[in-house]
Image 1: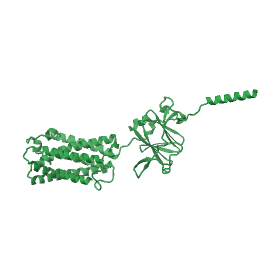
Image 2: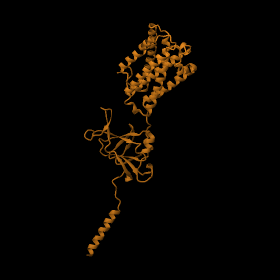
Image 3: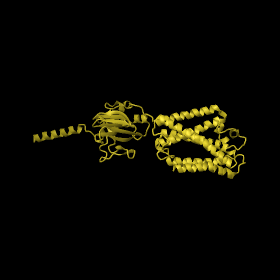
Image 4: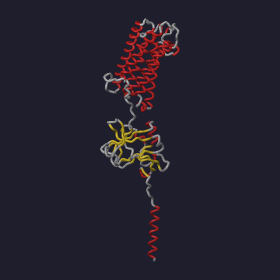
Length: 394
């Protein structure tokens, strides 16, 4: 009986000791189990597909041999948490395609989500692990520290400051865009300093809609005068940049095969811009010759000069604003450009139709030209080239 009591007492103390011993919870993860699990990315792995030119979900039966596997980390949703990365074998961490550091086998890399968001200013961040095939042994978690101590104070944490091995590089096209915008600003300043009063009147809406035949902006200005040449150069530069912009973002409304160089480096982009600007400037003068010929046939010799300047005014404002708008928005959020091709085509068609109406209303300010002749003239020099351009684009 006494032995039975001793046995029961011993079992009681053993069970009590086991109850008091520390037990690892299922949601305790990270270095030293010092984090609570928020999210496990084990089912979210991606691989890059050359066929689709995009990232697709990782399939264990198909992509086991892939050495690089990636994840899209939602920074905005997981702010105030930490990104925990571990690998059973040696791998290399890439962030947004840039090599950051080596991940040692069995170690944890801890990154603060808020620091990543401040450094990259993106809602989602692409990270890749390169080294071993497949996703076996690769662990990426979102964790919340058990205490309120910052990530950098954790004994096994890696502060984010050392991950910025190299700065985020801009693309050659972004550098080219910035240089071209600066050139356009200098061109505007030079044009304004050359003839301040005439340049302000050129941009004035009141002069455009003015029906007074004594308006000297149209009486004495000619397409080959200095101020008009500079304005035509500005419009040609904007149009050339828009062609390169659309080609760079796969929005080719007008086919450019054979016209542009195959490279995308800064010298090649500058050469393409120079070539396109020259072509558009030449087309402006060829169109002016067409205006003179059609105007002579219809016996409205005074209209082509007025028409050319007014058309240049409208084009200056439209292409200048469109260039700045596309450049500014593409720097902030380039993803919106993916489905823009057909929309841009409609924008250009709408612009040329509105321009046709405006030119018809405000070109014949003297009232001396028969409306039928003016309409026929504008159809030949405005509508027919538009129809040909749309047909060529489609």
